Length: 423
Ligand code: GAL
Image 1 (cartoon, protein in one colour):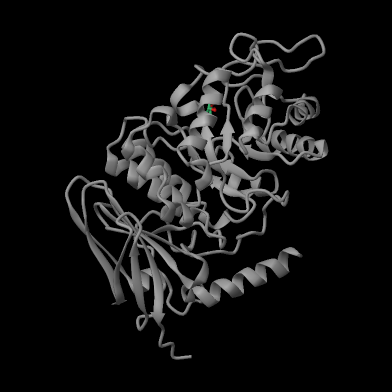
Image 2: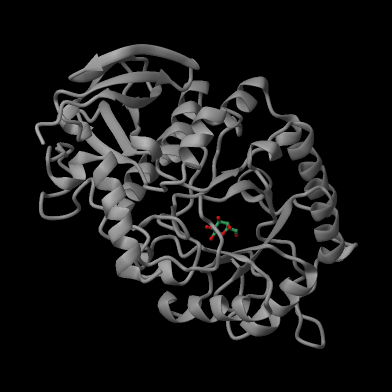
């Protein structure tokens, strides 16, 4: 389908489900972070237009990655045990299928043929054997390299070795490449990242391409044609301050996400111990609404029941994986304090996801008026609470309001039950 035709279809379907986009009820952004002339909060003009069409990432990728919990303490046993745990916990059945090895899997030097070599101490059986093991469980294997002369942990990088390395990854049976940005010799990412895309494409194996250039050169503006996702920020750490800052930074690029290519605000910290239960629930709720990759970053072999409850919330996952694939965004924020925030976005079937988020340490009432959500004032909706797993009310009109505990985030799906449009 041509770009313009697919854009037209998307626009029409969005108009049908989301009158705000038609300008019938202009949505209000009152968080003071962007001027009216910058990004319209419901602007979908870039939706689906730029995305790399390699058949992957129709919805954001889901899986696990070694970095947040293990950093360089990885080996083939941990990776296999994690794959086993994805199956035994049921997380794989919920969509978490990529098992992604991050930095430190390779030896410090290439071999005499110039090939990357798995570290013989930690990956003695090699990556092909690991891929076979992972595939035997119905899962997919991800690996990591760097668009520079070294990885961030000073293993050999793939710059100027793109074809050889891509061929090796394909030969091993790798399904996903995270491609980092260290030791980049000052060369623009727009020059360094496409060669690996082309090298992956020419292997004939379908390999997810995850661009990790930390948002330095505004990748949303160019990376959609290059990769299936692109990091929009520096690394997350396991703290409320980091997570909230990153959410706000990622929000700016919402209009550039869509099936085939996603903004990546970095991997999940849920379960790593630096945030409270409610903070992790907020983290997961906002990542899901933002159509962020859901890459678990904790030790799922030993996770608590609370961690599992968050990561396995099917209703929240379904928002993330909704086929419409429009990134939800911040639509209002209490003017001075920024405490009460409303994040929202359209879902398939004319529904809306609405997160009422308390960013401060006192309990607050967070309210979303219909005009902020882009709903016609005469519309009634039914409301589903995705954390309580309850239908709240059948005919809510005018606004949705709730008392929200400090650092908690309520998450709802609104389904219009009546719409008395004047048209
Ligand atoms: C960073 C990257 C992290 C992790 C780390 C490994 O550049 O953003 O996600 O991959 O390198 O060294």
